[in-house]
View 1: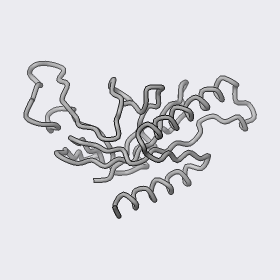
View 2: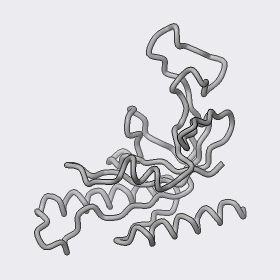
View 3: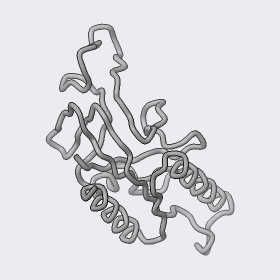
Length: 167
């Protein structure tokens, strides 16, 4: 099942926004319970737990939830993913998957050198973010789509989804 998610971009790769987890191209979830009562070794995810790889079925939801405003350290990327194995579907366009493959990543600049009053440190942050995005794409062997136009990036990711479905 194709879905969308946000990633935090760091020097170590594409990371979870909320957990200490660095994504590989292919990922298998495990449950890390917050207490012994929540431990369930019989499979991930369960409806009564928060385990599994979270993703949304609507890219606009990802954009509105995670990338709507630049932050002090803007570091997010949009990911097109394929979720499979066991999954839990929530009523708000959210899925949690047992397994997840990253198909492609996309990003738009938060701050650019061409913006009239952009402080130099913001431009440096954006250059560093682009460097680590490109490195993550190379390391994982996945396409990176980076452009000033969000519509262009989303269009390129839609083409990647079509390629994935056709293969």
